[in-house]
Image (tube, rainbow, N blue to C red; front, side):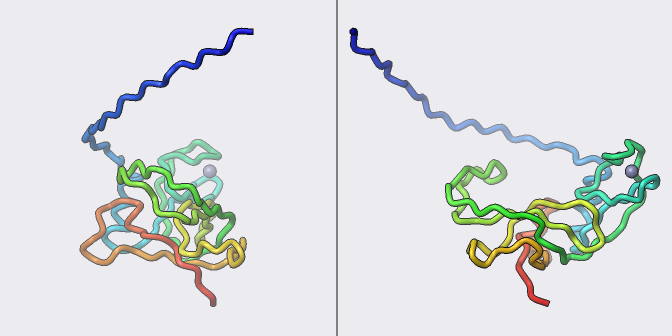
Length: 159
Ligand SMILES: [Zn+2]
C-alpha cells in the first residue's frame, strides 16, 4: 500500500484594511444616540401587538407593521442565559484578541419583552445563575461614541 503523500499547506499572511462606514438608519440611530447622549436604553413598541423590541427595529418582527412608538427601559434586568468563553477569538470590532475568560449573557431589561446580548462582569461558572439581576455600566460622559459598546458591560447586582 502506497504511503499517503501529504501536501504542504502554504499560508500567506496579509493585513487587509477596509475603512468603511454604514448608516444606522433612523431606528438604530435613535437607539444608539440615546445611549450616547442620555445613557438611556430605548426599545420601540409595536402598535398592534404591544411587544417591545430591543434592539429596536423599524418593523415588528411578529406583526411586520411599522413601529414608531418608543419606550425607555430600565438599565437593570435579568440574566436569561449566559456563556463563559475560555478560547480567545478575534473581536471584529477592534481587530484585537478578546481577553479570556469572558461572559456573554442574554439579558431581559426591566420593562422589555426581548433580550439583548452583552458582556457580564462575572466569569465564575459556580457563581453564575439564570435569573441573576444585573445593571448596565456605561462609558463615562464624553467617551461615548454612539455604539452599543457605549455600554461597557452589565454588572451583577444584588437587590
Ligand atoms: Zn407586533
